[in-house]
Length: 349
Image (cartoon, rainbow, N blue to C red):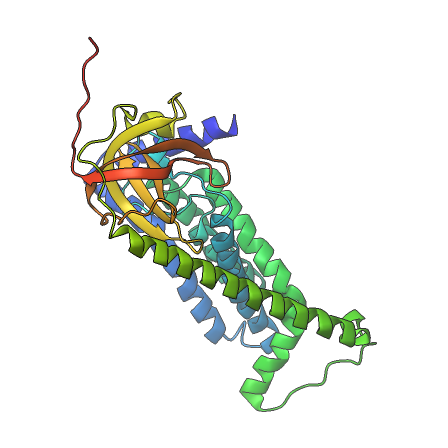
């Protein structure tokens, strides 16, 4: 039900904005400019008399820190879950350059929400203007068909949560601001030692173990990457892919596989390469787009191939799988590819 409402809102807004060049330009402006306006309001609030005290300015700093935290959360989420952008799933017109990352969640809304929370508490008048700008950002991101309404709402919630997460540090931030302005640091009231201070040796040992484990993991990934690269270099001494895919790899539209409607295991697709990503495990992900849809073709070190270039149209064949982690369909592994369209759809006999 929510997905249906999501889609209808995107189609309605995008249909209206895309109806004329003037409204399309308006949508592009709303997708970016209100966020810049919020940043300007933050700068004005910092210099305003009403919010000139270190206590009020600390809210603005917390807003910036919350925005950074929300951005980091979004980057991490993108490695575990992928939601296709509206322009890949719906009959809409993308009014901005097509992003290749996940639609969930909107980092524009997350930044705007965290900064707006700081402005509301530091300077009420500027905060009200920021709330209006936040709404306009959401309308713009949905109107240009790069995000769903739920992406915007989740992004705004992530920004507010990031702001709330840093609120306990506001006292320290206020004292640092005061020290920067006056050169004097006010003493915080004495508090009993906390849990970390009482058990600092235990927490210190845990920190050392964590750092050591992270270092070992990074080294293991690096070693694995070197082995994968060696396998890939070896591929240059092997014969290239055949001129055409084998007969068992049926030629299929990208949209059929991306929609989960392809029932066989071997497929050939023709599409444009819009992204080439080298993963830490040595795999190479190719984003292959067809009309209104995309799949991911994955080159594995065990079946090394030289990757194509971004913007190149290719004919690719491989094993069809669904990646539940990223929620996309893929050719995994990619068995072979050739530049251009080397096969064509045949009418049924």
